[in-house]
Image (cartoon, rainbow, N blue to C red):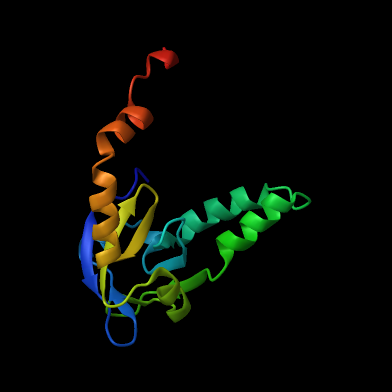
Length: 152
């Protein structure tokens, strides 16, 4: 997988189901069609992993030292509320109510590709954070992706 791309605006139905846009589905490998894990994101969003990518993440968690308090705490917090979901015949996934409440997601959502996972944001929260962060984008880009002459 080379990574996901795109930003999609969706609406949740009254049951909390989100229709996965067809452009998103086209980016999924055959083995990942319709199988996801939804968890808390590291910001105020949800993370949606494909089943195979969740396996990669679990492999990393298995390497943590469970005798170190920070490793145990991280693993516990990272997995809190993580839920396997399956797309129904219409391509919808039911987002867990507890996770929706945690992320403040109501009806309008933005699904954003973030390399190997999808972030699911409440639309208003996403627009606010992007507006705030955009003012810092030039400096952030230079800091993160800037001069790589050290690597030559």
